[in-house]
Amino acid sequence: QKEVEQNSGPLSVPEGAIASLNCTYSDRGSQSFFWYRQYSGKSPELIMFIYSNGDKEDGRFTAQLNKASQYVSLLIRDSQPSDSATYLCAVGVEKLTFGTGTRLTIIP
Amino acid sequence: DGGITQSPKYLFRKEGQNVTLSCEQNLNHDAMYWYRQDPGQGLRLIYYSQIVNDFQKGDIAEGYSVSREKKESFPLTVTSAQKNPTAFYLCASSMGSRGSNQPQHFGDGTRLSIL
Image 1 (spheres, rainbow over the protein chains, first blue to last red):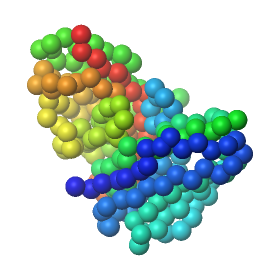
Image 2: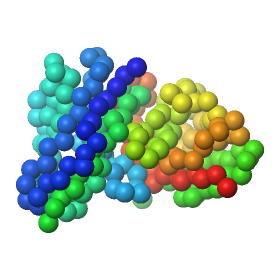
Image 3: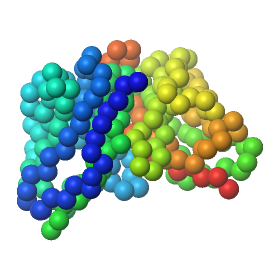
Image 4: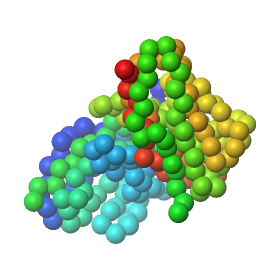
């Protein structure tokens, strides 16, 4: 059974600080990694995706992948109250396996 | 305006009744997916389709059925055999077909409840 693990939180971060969200996965052959943001009562929205080891930056968001450690993370710089949401990590090709999500709260 | 449209937004099912959730996309995506989300849990895959007239079971297909007669449409039927259908149902689609690692994008979802 392929597994994706995330700390459920809640993770509280002051406004303007860096939020760091982590995800580990069990399938060593995994090739594609995705981060989704889900506001309460809404559907998931794609934030970032990464396929290669290293960092990928898009605006305030950076995805980091370390396949040797089976670890993927999402950094949010200059955190804003609007970043308060649940962040879902998903792993796989065609069939995605989702983690249960980390609830992030940005404190003004 | 391209996107994925799910309807209805809210649906109520009586005991012993089958209900069908609609999912339509105008993104010209090959692959479409149905997920179920329960409180405090991640998304679980019900069915997926990578090409018209073909679909595969996901991790929790029992009590559900699908069809893919058109590229744009992937309806999900929740049958009376699904004993715990109350959940948030999400439809997604992605470019590319078999073996593709393209990101999946989601519709707004349908909330199904038991009367």
